[in-house]
Length: 118
Image 1 (cartoon, helix red, strand yellow):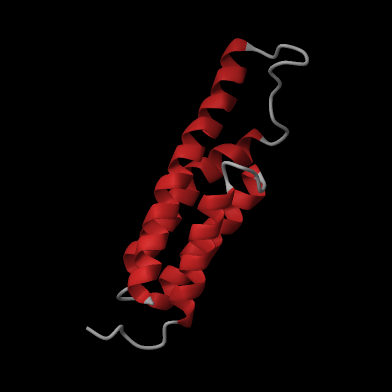
Image 2 (cartoon, helix red, strand yellow; image 1 turned 90 degrees about the vertical axis):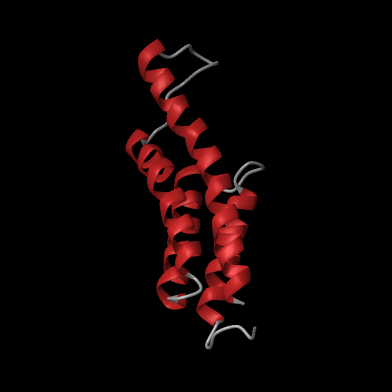
């Protein structure tokens, strides 16, 4: 289970990094270019989007990397990353897999009580 948590955490982190690039880039573009009514509008909480765009991939990848040696800490980090993605971006077509991979990896890491058999 720890190996599955490792893989799911890293894949979820990479996918959330892609979502984060677009989220951070969108907020930066609107701040630079300005709003166009009914076409391009700034999000309500820019700070939340930018913070989640940066920290969620870090937490997911670090949690996945820790899943084999420190399953409890790794699982908590991956679950926090899934919550951050959901809080910032919601559940949609581009966020469903990062959220699901991070959450499933976190739950598998939390459920792992002893090391995997070789």
